[in-house]
Picture 1 (tube, rainbow, N blue to C red):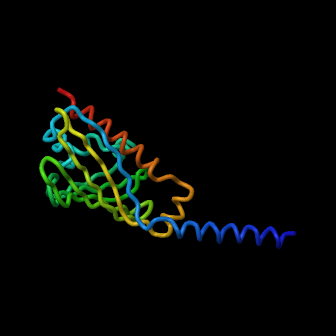
Picture 2 (spheres, one colour; picture 1 turned 30 degrees about the vertical axis):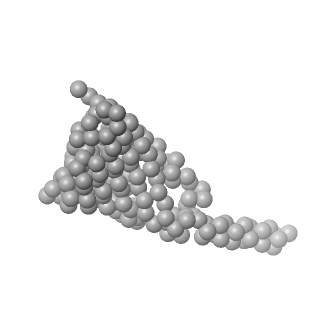
Length: 175
């Protein structure tokens, strides 16, 4: 009886690992928001990492977060790092910009897990306002695939993107 139960558990575990291995090798999370402000105004709150941190949803999660900025805080080469017990340890660097329509960043997490992703903000003038799209993509190593069986990363991170975009909207639309 005990041997049969152990074999069933082992078979279930093997099937779980096989299923996880078949999941995609990359991920992409994306959210958009329409903001009633010109692209130049919105761009300024994204391209400057100090401006970014006025609406950064993860920064709000830990008031004790330790921050560091590089010698540049805006444009290509601008760097920002954080160290937090609540949101982990990592850094980001602006890699490319196209004013006022695009900002791309390299995003590196150290804790609670190592990950190296890219983030793109795309701004499109639309009807007197700006359509902002925030996307993050990167590789999904096996452990991420396995974790994804139990945790919906799109829903979890997507909610943070939505919260951040709502705050960005409020700031950019302020007179």
